[in-house]
Image 1: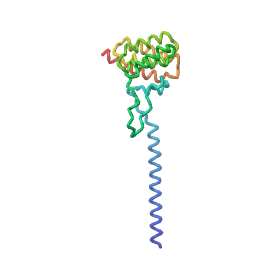
Image 2 (image 1 turned 135 degrees about the horizontal axis):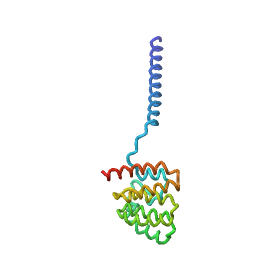
Image 3 (image 1 turned 180 degrees about the vertical axis):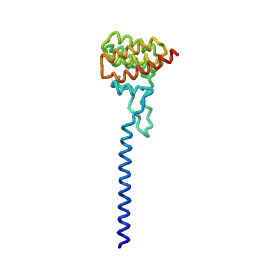
Image 4 (image 1 turned 90 degrees about the horizontal axis):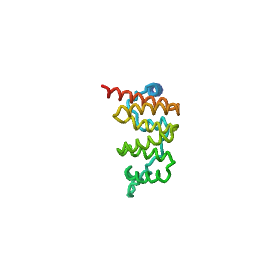
Length: 185
């Protein structure tokens, strides 16, 4: 009986040590995760949408059901381009569709068409922060110093129009400054 009591206490003691160790490990791990912030070296479209909000409705079709033998529902951007151009022609005042079209041109390596549309929108809607942001992000991908400088100005205009985008816009501007510096070397 005495042996059984000792074994029971040893088991309870071991479980207590494990529980305390687990709890401390979890607490320390949680604190480390929230305290560490990795430096951003490059910004993605997802980052931009997170900071600035959804730019335009998604053009993706619903995902195909697993195990289904149906044809895939999603079309390529090339396939969707003609339909999007028709929608813009049918409703030329729909700015969201025009922005989506400009972004689609850019994604399909028709950058000049996209920039032309974005410049036209920027002139027509000079107080639209979304237009300025998209124009700036397309321009910042160029290798031309003039475009990079124009991108900086477009981000400045977006910040004035919508101050809550300042942090993200300034991160993009830091990336542009680094790009400009590398072009000067």
